[in-house]
Length: 630
Image (cartoon, rainbow, N blue to C red; front, side, top):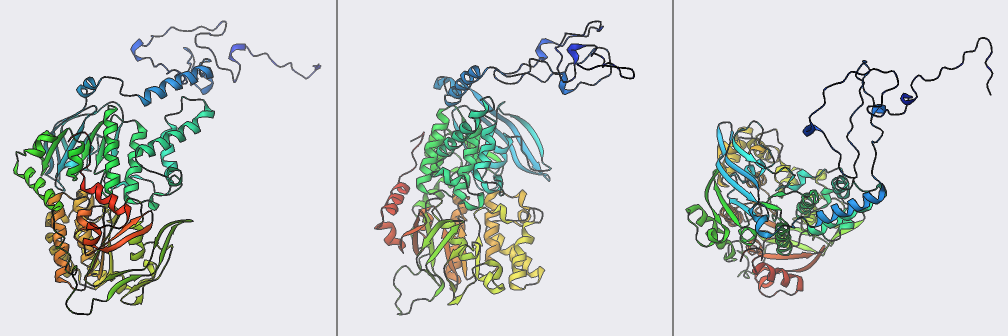
């Protein structure tokens, strides 16, 4: 007991017990003697209701008289969560709803219109990139947009996300679903944070979908969702992949990680921009099967692709674009069998011609030469072992590239093709092996090579957009290569760069723009022109024709064949998943899981393969991908 004498004051009791500090006040329970002024009630339609198992709305308690601002302590006392047993029941219901989103009948699902574009016109600097495009997307269907590079496919697809080029003038109407719209970009490396591991990128999305669960169950459920999304995107060995960074993945693996992100979001519409670019035949078949299953679940897919085999296998409707306009549209089977527009017929004919190409285009040395001396090797790699951290990703025995020869490196996505190419170019230093250029040791790192060695080995990246400075015109960046590596004057270098770019099908007006004004296919051609301007001895093309339409791809391959015929000191390394492209080379090397399983002349490898993986790859390529349409 405390005694209070003279000079000590008894502590005053709080005048309002219900309003003690730190205790929230119940709304409407005013202290005794407190006079309140009635105020106008809000309309019922504007009230916000908390979802089952979630916190109630943060509605502060404000007194009718007084100037004190509401604080956190003024929230309602019933601001809490539901009992754990009700949370678990609700979680099971939402999980079942998430796994069975397509409970409606197939007829009703296909009849639902989830996205629509009417009269879309996008102008940049007075030039119409897209003009008068009409597009209707229904749930559970696949709508494909095909056309040449720069025809407006990506601009139309991004309109569904509300994304347009900077400074664009947009007219028309775009109606997208209330839910999320997933997007799989053509260059997925730009969509992945290079400083974070794959697991962290995916868990950030999964955590937002498990907040309704009890805290102790969230981490496990989020991890299960991440693994399921990776499995749906056809990414095996997902546990090891979650620990890697984006730069430690191949281009095809990066694309499938972005696809896993879109599937994890649970979007009603997915815009896939060249989803099979850089994918081998086996992985491409699985992606077609996955997209078919996604469409069966009621998700609409907008496919932007140059791969007409995939379009025929997947699409229900096809729109053919040229110079920003839709020149033909209709059911996929009808467009493939009876095209009505000349441009559509030209696309189909070019694609068929690539499949029937005889392997004499680049094979100048396919048959034994009459003279006894074969060309000397220009680039030789000894037994080479490459690693990503502590993980060994590539083991290749001695490999030699002769002068004037073309070598195609094929294999599944993630088999080590890009890692081998980066080792040869000096972009991957963590490897054991000796590199020789004309018999002289070649430094392992790009930074240790002199100007002549840099010019001798040139690399064309698969992600061409990431290889350009977004603030400078493309022509200036291409010409800079001749200035730095060959010592040309700026004016002379610009003239030669313009001539090279024009030979690859790019106009002077196009190359004077910044990279963000060019399509992915146009940037790939610009990247090839920049490498050619260095006058290299060895040109390494990493999927340099994968993002091109059949007409442009055929022109680029013919251009490379002409360079090999005209320049006898040039050798070519083609990193590709397309066996039709690989058939143009003199020799083929097949990689599987980081191992060189077969290597030899092109005709021998394609006609009489020795390894079972090569036979399986050839068998899958000769069969068109099977999907929704015949």
